Image 1 (cartoon, one colour):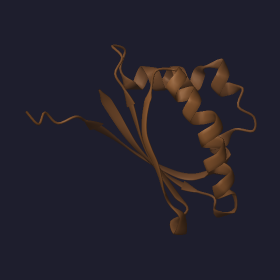
Image 2 (cartoon, helix red, strand yellow; image 1 turned 180 degrees about the horizontal axis):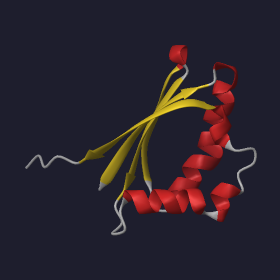
Image 3 (tube, one colour; image 1 turned 135 degrees about the vertical axis):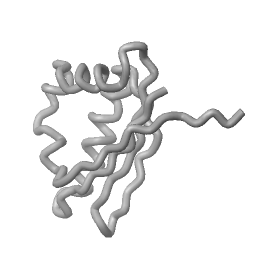
Image 4 (cartoon, one colour; image 1 turned 180 degrees about the vertical axis):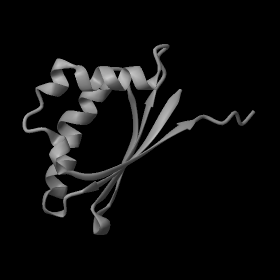
Length: 99
C-alpha cells in the first residue's frame, strides 16, 4: 500500500464549505476510484485540513492519482472544491513491517 499524507491550508472564510464538499464529493469519488481514506482531521484554529490517502493497485499511486484528476467525475465537480485550498503539502509514506 502506498500512502500520501495531505495537509491543506484552507481559506478561513470557506472552511466549513470545504469540509462539506470534501465529505460529500471528494471522498466518495476517491473511494469509488479505488483509494482508501484514513481521516480526515482538522486543525480548526489554523484552518488546516489533514488526511491520509492510500492506494494499493499495481499501477501505483501516482498513476491512480492522475486518473482521478482526469476523470469525468472529478472534472464535473462544480464549483471545483480546490478553490478553497490556499496551500498544499504532501508526503509519500510507506508501511513499516512490524513483524
